[in-house]
Image (cartoon, rainbow, N blue to C red; front, side):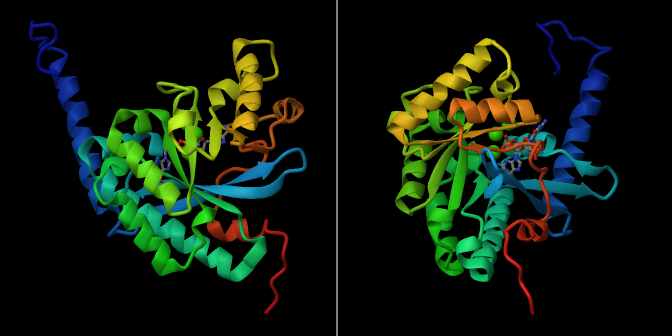
Length: 280
Ligand code: C2E
Ligand code: CA
Ligand code: CA
Ligand code: CA
């Protein structure tokens, strides 16, 4: 931020420099976070409408910074994407999630969460050898690949040919692919044709308007027809009220995720929702 339209803006610079410094410090801290055991995953239930039976979970990364406390992934994930550290971070996440999913599968068999979703960033997807890495993790863990859902954004997949190839390879491994935040990126319905999508996650910004007569409501309603026709599962994201859940159910939505049902929680607490009692 040294040049603002050619003219050097001297009073602004110190602030921009401070922000850049804070960013750099946070980025440096993040690089230590794995070794210092500051990262952990929470799992948010994805439920079946209308009764709310657990259909799956989405793994969400958390960072407990020694001074700043919990840092939002909305802050540190983009940071890690910018400096490339997301590749290492993403690998750590995948290892943890695959291990957790395999453990659930071993312990609870058919009652284990049917779908375990993990967010894959654009940068990770484009990293050469990423699908091979996933294949290796799956092989080591013995996890049924079908249980693992790769959540990717439209923008990530549309970005490059490599990303689309990677998605196809994940599909070939037997995993399911979900298009995340659907409707917010460079939306292109052709992606639903070119890309082996099994799940479409309708973004919260659309779900927010679902009880009204807004354009969002019309789109959410229309998307269910498209997904049914293509045999893609639709998940409504960010459901916060009973009214929204009811309306979505009426529209034909089978799956939903949001604070109305459950917040992200520790993996051990997910086990309590599996409807099986484990004794001894
Ligand atoms: P996302 O993939 O769209 O994940 C859903 C986000 O919505 C989560 O925020 C979740 O806590 C939040 N959410 C769920 N239900 C509700 C609701 O009813 N109301 C509201 N207001 N929010 C709800 P979170 O955990 O802060 O994650 C933010 C974003 O950070 C994620 O958005 C995802 O893009 C990214 N992220 C999180 N974990 C990972 C990860 O392991 N890898 C990558 N690459 N990205 C991640
Ligand atoms: Ca997601
Ligand atoms: Ca999302
Ligand atoms: Ca989002």
